[in-house]
Length: 98
Image (tube, rainbow, N blue to C red; front, top):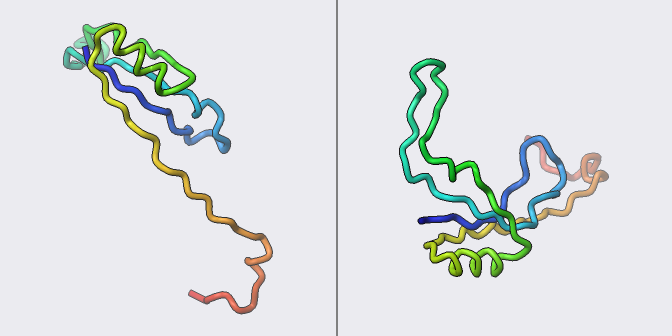
């Protein structure tokens, strides 16, 4: 069984970074998804794609996957670069004009 270990990114509806510090373990889809004939919803015969486990650290998630005998892929979070900005810079007279 294949699993993916990652840190979730923040959603578009939140400005802060809450719930992005934990590590998640998701199962990879084993059966293909197909549209349901009656309603047209996308469905799958595999119920493990609904299971999501969370861990405090990456090492705990890796240890869990190894203990269960699963192959895993670790997806590192991108480095967040914060550019310092000042409100007063909006009113500088020597800023470039576009």
